[in-house]
Image 1: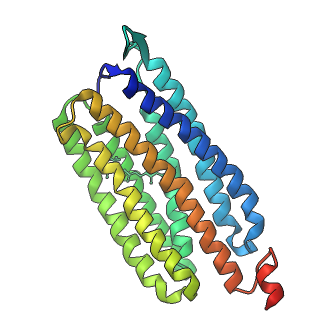
Image 2: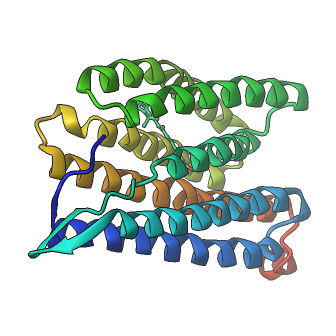
Image 3: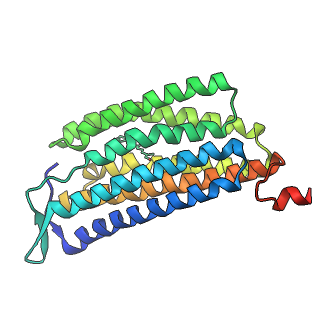
Length: 260
Ligand code: RET
């Protein structure tokens, strides 16, 4: 899409949201790396994956932030396109790398037998790749018609992923220790609530928003959803890993096992 002219407020909103994205992902990286010692060895890989996801995101947010700054110049109180393109591909490359990793984390929580987990990861990762690759041509399309077509195609694997995860996370509740159940329920809601924001933000141009408002809606929506889907999701995974360590009688911090 061609970049629209933005008011100073609109430009700054996105500028600050992207800057917040860098800070949030960077801080989450430090947290996940240090929190690894608070869960038993079984759950450390999950925290490492969270750390990898947010560090990949911190890098991409830095690149998106730089690209956003270069794409506009201040002219007469408004921000007008500088002629340098804004590179939205950073987001899609980020998703290509991070969404499969998030799926691995979600599936790890299910505590499935090894063989079943492997095949589910393969199917969902393939669907996620299709979802992202089909969405990109729509993101950069010049017409709303093309945007709609690619968006619809991308929604097919999207619905499939959420359908499978929602069902499997629900079915796993019986296998979880009681104090973990509420966390897994919250994880399921967070998943649906944050993943659902992406297609809604993508649809901004269809719901009557003009060029400037649509651009702001898309960028703000993706950024908020990314912070919650990556850092927020990782925090819940951490909480689950911590509770499971305690339930397994293997709390490395010692507070709970000492009393037992
Ligand atoms: C697109 C295109 C329009 C249709 C749909 C989309 C879905 C994107 C999603 C992205 C999720 C990203 C995550 C990143 C976290 O690291 C591609 C916008 C359905 C669901 C979870």
